[in-house]
Image (cartoon, rainbow, N blue to C red; front, side, top):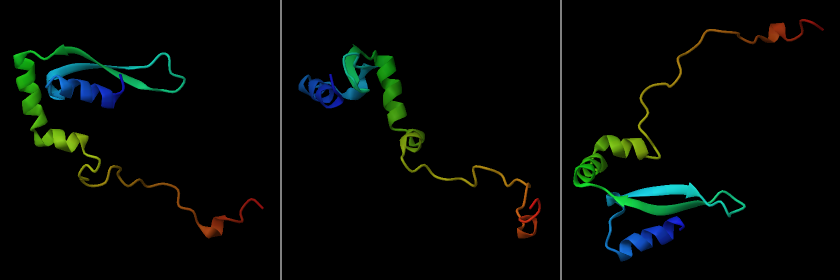
Length: 92
């Protein structure tokens, strides 16, 4: 079922999304890429405790943030070719 219908289905059964292993797949009958969601199984108590602790972690918030904090430059400065207008007419 589509994601919104899946969330409503879980809510109608008073089941938090975090407590279920969800299987995601593409709808083979759709002509465009379309995800479908299906409850696979409930998490076991140990798994649920781990998921809850991860969900409350600051590292998780950082990992899923659309604006992760930037720490320095992603690429180091590289020495290389420098274009000079003096070289522009060479080869004419």
